Image 1 (cartoon, helix red, strand yellow):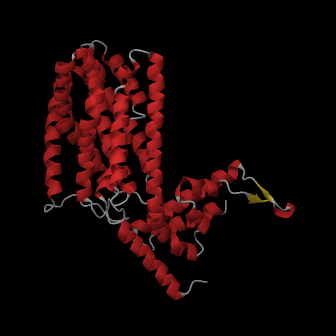
Image 2 (tube, rainbow, N blue to C red):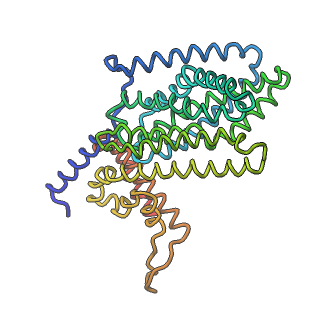
Image 3 (spheres, one colour):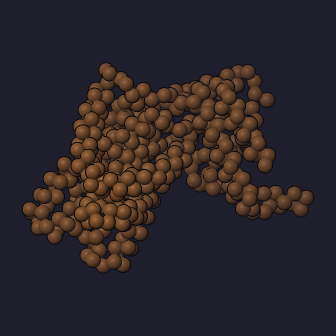
Length: 400
């Protein structure tokens, strides 16, 4: 039985956790006294101006291809968005902040920064080493630096605009992913238009479809992944009130983002025309990128889970949430232990392995507890219709 004093202490612990992480706070873009706002607006507006100039010249001639690539690009973007939103476990980032990150990635990073730097470096490589070298290696020796720094600048500006919100490694991962998602969406759109232009408009739909299929295959390991790693590295590098500065790990994650990007863009040069070698390189780089991203998410989860436990502590004391369900939030190993825990055989005695249905049911329980944690964060621990619904859902799912 929880005493009044204990209940008050648990409620205070919940508020302290929410104050430390900024979970549930809204994002306020308009901050006229914040220099980050004016730098953001200046670069984004310049990028929009350049983007309009790039696209308007093609609209009249290649409208079918641009319309097709734009429509399919929206579908791919929504799919990525849903996936990254699912990965945002403990408390969903404000949509307004994610939209701001997407705009930087789509307009500022490519059109105001990366295109100019890439073009200059490609010309330089061609002059120094010849066109064949530039065709094979220029992308891998320029984009990892110019594009990741351009996207990373947006993450850094958003840290300055949302310094009370972006404080955990998980925040850096999700924010970086949405900057990268904006970059990828606009890049796919531009490449599709260029594909149609390559055939002089004679087979716009065919060329655009071929380009979309090629880009879709390569987008599995692309800008959202690279910039998610970069964003996590920035949090470690600059440090926050809940994440002490860890320069080595921060630089390591930023280097991993650039290395993965560079290897991905250099596969043709490394493969030297050998199709099988290029395919093997693609698999290897994909495994490398996803493994590093998994590590970043594990670090982020272990950092954020104690705060989630404090948020849920009063619910455990009231019997709404079980401690085993909270323990399952502390990383992959803890989650796996909870999901695959053995089950008593009943009257027969002993233990048996959990069935597939029981494992599925435990995953549902974890998801319901995470939803409750997110709703508690948005209500600052107070009762609300959303919190009441989530509490009832936790109980309902456990009784299935």
